[in-house]
Image (tube, rainbow, N blue to C red; front, side):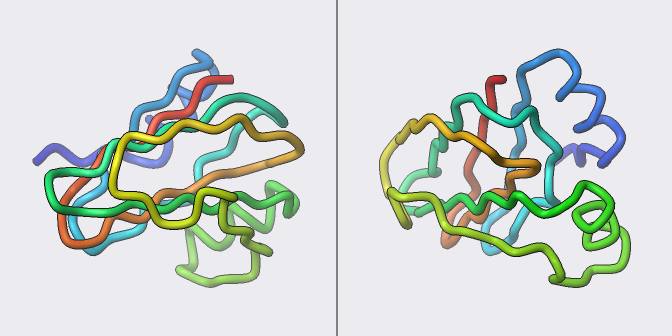
Length: 111
């Protein structure tokens, strides 16, 4: 499976559409986003996914990604953990990350 680097994710954010593949049992790095948009998850067969949003400062978010720390204040999206394709709009976020459980999945952001 190809790995997307953090700088590639940020370049994709500038294009207003981000697609992140998340391996089973893993959480993506924080992805900086514009303050409002749509987020969608597509869990793999038999798996589930969840989304976390933060409004922490971008410098804190980037430091978390670089240092594997958890200083960003994360909020789980209102849908919780889902097993089917789910989309929701968001407001006032600075970054988003995806978690896939027992099966790989895809997270998408449109700003």
